[in-house]
Amino acid sequence: MVAIEISYGRSGSIIEKESRRETTEEMEEYLISLVNEMKMAGISSSISFVDSETGFLKVNGRNVTEILDGLEIKVPELEPGTSPAPITSFERSSNDWDVSIMEDIPDLLMKNAISKAYSEYLAGKK
Image (tube, rainbow, N blue to C red; front, side, top):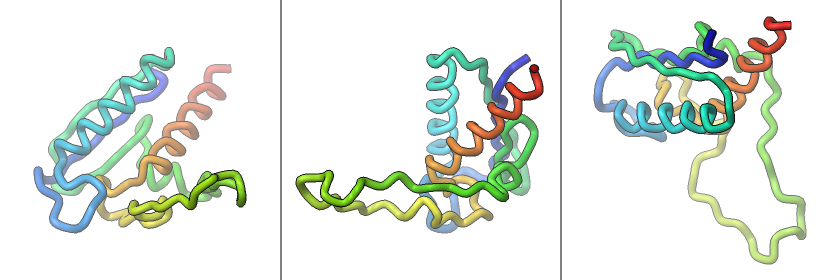
């Protein structure tokens, strides 16, 4: 059995609204990269792509928004005075996600959803 199975339902090739990934192809590349990272870490994982009228993103059969519901996500921050120079960031905050656009999911949230699904998988194996 695969420990992590990601399913991406793509509704069109170009994303109509502002998103972190402008096309479904960019999203596919991102997800393939995540699956490859997990495989290199020894975690059995797979991905499937589905053409869908409404976009979706699932991990182990559950919608990512459902997995993230109730989680307290902490954004990693540097402690004051640990950096010799101020850090400038041009990316949107990890909490700034249009949940109606799966391609807009921040990396931090996606990895948290995968981590939770993996821990649930491991708990079910015991």
